[in-house]
Image (cartoon, rainbow, N blue to C red):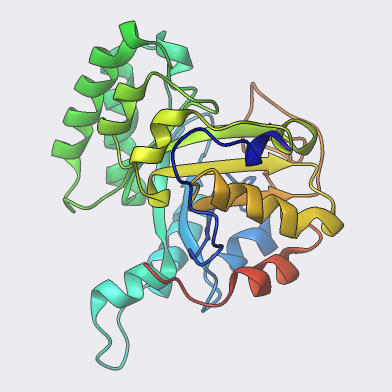
Length: 273
């Protein structure tokens, strides 16, 4: 298969690396009660989850999203003398979704959304969805990323760029993680990784794949490891909703896959960094 084609650079193919989940955006907590509850279940190997209230933070604080964000934070609170870093690593981080509209949204609008996410929902970092991929847009994305880092009270708060494909290599230095695949299993199983990604550890890349049959979970995880992805979300749900990511059940990533418990057990409880 193409993902096994040699690029001249050794890939991480041993399968020893610990995968974890990135949740690109569950539906509103009223529609996805079980999904948001799973984010706080102890031992779930969660790296981060995206909060998308209404294509961003919305025009005012949403009480249901405030409650969900509060439960998320409380699940990570240190207990019994546990080190805060250990709890945080096990519980994942909450990211506010900023829609870059492929570089078309004004800088000031994006900063206003970021401030609202921080003030209302106390997010840990940001997910820059529909991020540009071309070299010409890199300076603007770097400027935005630098300003967002200055906003964050936690210097380690993650910034994730949602390219959904391999961007110009310089983007890898602009954020903590890049989403380099988002799409259907029929495309993912024949996908090829960009050679430049081999210079980075698997923690720098994320893959989101829908329509993955239960019988192909092991193959899908093998592809992710081979291509250097450390963060994944696989689901057997199909379909795509580009205009309203994470807003309703029409988005394949808005709800739990039918094999959620199985994939959690396959990845293993806890995260090994």
